[in-house]
Length: 374
Figure 1 (cartoon, rainbow, N blue to C red):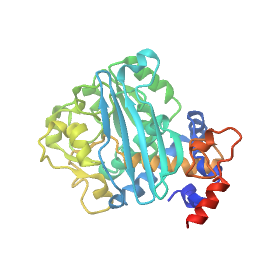
Figure 2 (tube, rainbow, N blue to C red; figure 1 turned 180 degrees about the vertical axis):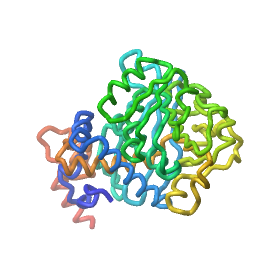
Figure 3 (cartoon, rainbow, N blue to C red; figure 1 turned 135 degrees about the vertical axis):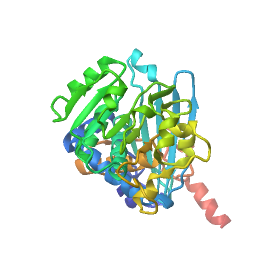
């Protein structure tokens, strides 16, 4: 249970402060990451995600609810255990950058299961990038060959730097082979990571980028059934971190790649709809990541095996990321209290808060009548 929900008084004795969730704004999140350091935030989130995946049976899980439109998708991602509930609101609109908006924007909530009272409202645009990178690195720690040092990064947009730094700090990747259909995206990444210590090699095609790569990360944005990686690009022992295919009608891997690989997913019912495995038969064999983390199923079987993490993003990762951000914000004294829930002296008298100068307490006459009727 999070720190705030532990401290909540009973509904009959709530104070104004107790009904005000902590609010982490976008500037607060930036301040938090700068103060802790991006590598520490990614590592901390990875630890939280691992811990929550190891509690997999404790959670009430469901695939996210998605509303698709011609230009993109808006989704809600809920999950809870017996003490804490969370959800994320997130969109995916690849054409947004043409009008000055991010492709992905998100916010999230934590709430106390016992009362339903929100305890945290937080930005999740920056946090989603951090948690996605942390999840990718956690999966690769579990599935890739331990001596992996070279990664191809296909798609150099908003998520790419976070992926690069996660794999550098959590796996020891020292060389990136880069490709994007937009040269400006790659130039942006090279500029942003110029002082990272990573060796950055700009490539002309995906096929060139994957040459000699131990790990291939695909994080493209177009909402299309694409084949970014084809079977002829595979080499023995390669691990593929497929991040971009995350909704119906959007893929990055050729079906032949999946046929040749051992495939791992987050939550199978969701991934069969949204992931690269949407193009495979309904009985196509996959292993859920939590099973490998808990030791109930094996990950990579041998060094030459090709592994794929078909990552679509799952609500449990946001649950873990929100918990990390909540604790970090409280520790650093960041955020502010949000007056989201009206405070009432009498919780049965909502209308009373609209009466100027009138107390929300139960009227004395009604109190006396209640005593008589009792």
